[in-house]
Image (tube, rainbow, N blue to C red):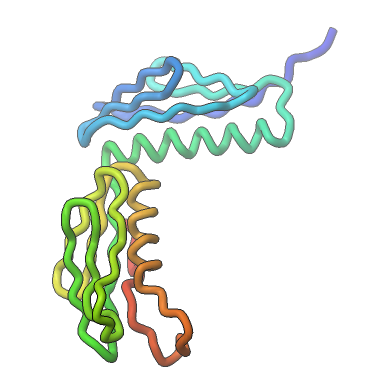
Length: 177
């Protein structure tokens, strides 16, 4: 008789957060609602009491990795709906004063290194971007959207063809909260 090897991970669900599991995992919390479909092979997702339980039977290396990945995604969804994600960025310039403006779906960076045409960075999903003086605050409930918006801002001000030790102008990540 063979023993069934089961690997099990648990994600605690806090008060005020509701989770529905069918084809996709839907999390409802005080800040809104997020849903995500997980195309996992050997991982089963179910709910027991105030826990989300992830299990895999006879796990291979990829199954173990997928188990941890799905656990992280679900806990990030829960954290985003209870606390939210906030990234603080700093506008740095030495040569030409930059003007940064946030609109509904994009951030416009004017006068970067004295360029005549403004640079733009896309705002992903339902992320809010606020510009306060020389600080840019990126907030949202989806960690991936907040991180991608922050990366878009950094990439929009990337300097090519000049010495990075001299030309340190740009918008850089300072703190994650």
